[in-house]
Amino acid sequence: MYRDNYITALRTELLEMVSGHLTPVSMRYGYSEVPLETNIKWRPQVLVLGNYSSGKSTLINEFLGTTVQGTGQAPTDDSFTVITYDESEPDGAPIRVTDQRDGKFLLNDPEYPFETMKKHGQRFASHFKLKKVNSPFLKNLAIIDTPGMLDSITERDRGYNYQDVIGDLAQIADLVLVLFDPHKAGTVREAHTSLRDTLPAKTFEDRVLYVLNRIDECASMTDLLRVYGTLCWNLSQITGRKDIPMIHLTYSTAAAEKTNRSEDLQAAYLHHLENQREELKKAVLQAPCHRLDNLASFVETHGERLGHFLEGMISYGKKGFHGQK
View 1 (cartoon, rainbow, N blue to C red):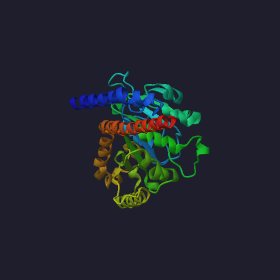
View 2 (view 1 turned 45 degrees about the vertical axis):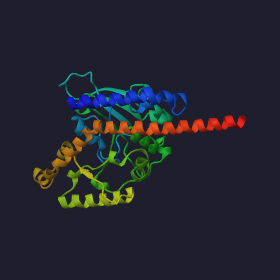
View 3 (view 1 turned 90 degrees about the vertical axis):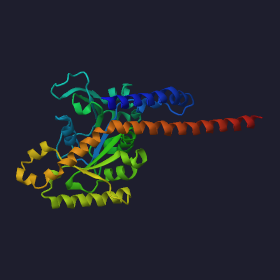
View 4 (view 1 turned 90 degrees about the horizontal axis):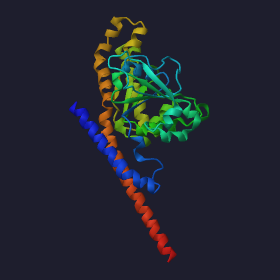
């Protein structure tokens, strides 16, 4: 309890610093069109990206303890879904979706940090929605599920620039999960672009977690190691990193049961990886701690940028004044 109160107090102090000192100056001199705290005032956020069959929705359902998102082998949902906690529900009530709102609501309600996303247009707004769920997992964070990445899709097909939307969401997210599945340990075109260009430009490397999901579908440990090695190689080529990025291994127990695999086959290797599933869950629940680091970086970055901006305006003003003389 003390830890949670301490985190809340620090977060409040940083937000007051932004709203009380940086925002008035930035709004007065045209540095920003909206209050700087707009994108950081809400709760910590976890952005979930991945290929269309990587099991994003299944993993989210596993975290939340109930079926919130539709699942399937083919693309089942082409919307960006913000999933947040419903505090109005009593503790102990059955976990369920308690409320749903559309993109127009999300983009216009000042409680949420998505006002700047209006620039992506009506087509995006129609593929943006909110779900409130009374899952304890969401008490200190929100999850943003995304449309599965594809190979041949274009901006014309989606009706909005997918990479621009991903970049804006990654910029305000405190953690980004990038999911892969054993059947596509390589990356499709949109995933390749996201990893190579969009995420490096919009967020920090330590905010991105790579996840190999659906590992229960590997027939053996040897098969899993082959897939893992392939993914490591592909990521090293795309990201340009000399070191192999950490890759978390996980699967859904509910999904594994539906495949009707025998317990003997699962026990052959999955029981060795239960700690991996727990480590991933713990990493996601650490989003509030990342939030403090991100807020501190936000204050420092915009403080410096605003200072340079004002220096430039003063210098320009002096040149104009001397020119008039």
